Picture (cartoon, rainbow, N blue to C red):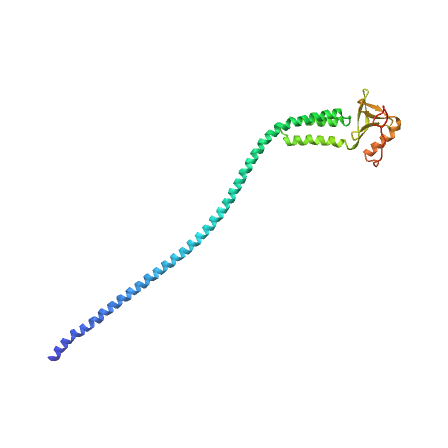
Length: 257
């Protein structure tokens, strides 16, 4: 009876002793779960931090790249601005030059016309060599002055070229064939020009020679003694003989020179 009572009395005690152990196990599980959740949250936080760090690194690299591009564009824009400023100055210079050209044209056109007139007068008063060629050149210059498709510079160049040709005549000798107009007759003869000092002719048969007399403005026949000197002069001019001393008169009358 007493044992039963003891057993009956001991069971609740054991049960009471077991209850704290059960309660402790639940708290441990809860603590473990909490730790696991904390570890998972920490891992997720670390992943977020790592992702943010990667994004920050990428953004920093992109920022630096954009900064380099900005500096490059700034340098390029500065260069373009210098180019624009230079072109603006060039345009201003060209505009000023165009204004000067208009003034120059007003001044130079009458000058060129006068130059042609002077050249024409000079040819008319000069000894009569290559008359057709020289007159044709003057006619061409006059025609050119009325052409709009020829620039002002080209007109001036051709006029100066004509003056240069006339200048060359004064320091060269030349032989050529042309018609001689004398006493109403025309015949083909050989002409010998020695600069602008003397102009001679020799008939094709070699039997008559003559000289241009600038004072009388006429051709004068030379004595037969000058047939050979004039012939030799023609050969020198044509490079058929080497240069040599030539004794020729400047006019047939009034004393030989």
